[in-house]
Image (cartoon, rainbow, N blue to C red; front, top):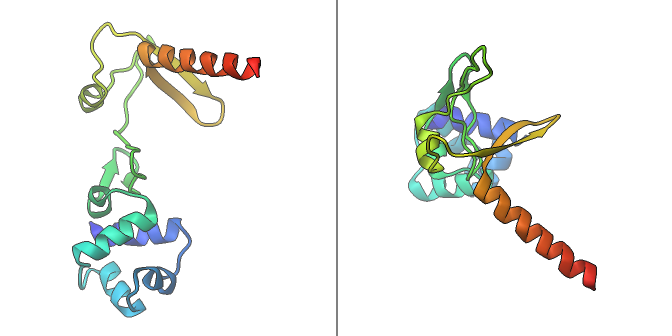
Length: 146
């Protein structure tokens, strides 16, 4: 719920109730009532809060849980947590349907596997990867000529 997200986001970002209330131009007591669930902010205040924390309004007002993790903080705008998946014994993963639909992934489509030793794994459609690499190479050749 909104009150849970307000607490999580404020704590993640290291604000006191007083500091965040000042940013929204309200009293600390009014903000405290939002976090306790006694009252809720109007839509304009919600928009201001979502801008301060860099989350969508939708992520601000909804509480999400991930299997085995409990409640998770709202994701920054443009970022999503789709839940967990399990790798089978053969190393195969099933990408959730909502993700396949969002990114227009189809059976048999080739994906590039990118990794970062500290951050994890990313899957990128081959076509997108090739476009970005072509653009990078063009940029590199232009800069090499200078």
